[in-house]
Length: 161
Image (cartoon, rainbow, N blue to C red; front, side, top):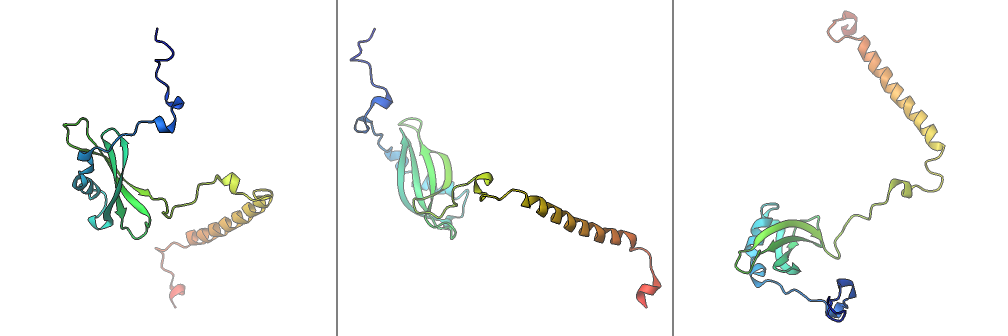
């Protein structure tokens, strides 16, 4: 049985200073042309800007970040995640995506409908609105029924005098 002093610590027991950092794979980092080619399969080349940087996702797994030049996406970037299976393998594309940057314009967080209601909303006033809506639907039905009484195939001379 192993001694308590020789048992490796669990991840939760490690301090941030003790965590092991993974270095970026230089071969994957150099695969910028492969990343651009992958992006050109999902977006026009004109929408792909300069290489902004990279994020190390794991051992031999790197995401390359490119500026997004689409007019409606300021602050967004294209991300291409590349990997190699071993040190002798060539890089391959895992995924491509458009991601918001730190200052990108994004939609607000979603709030459930029930949480968006103000006090008193959704009470008895809705019943009155439903009755009014039913009246509108009834008016449309009457118009449709008038059209049903007049058959377009019949010619009536009194209509054309």
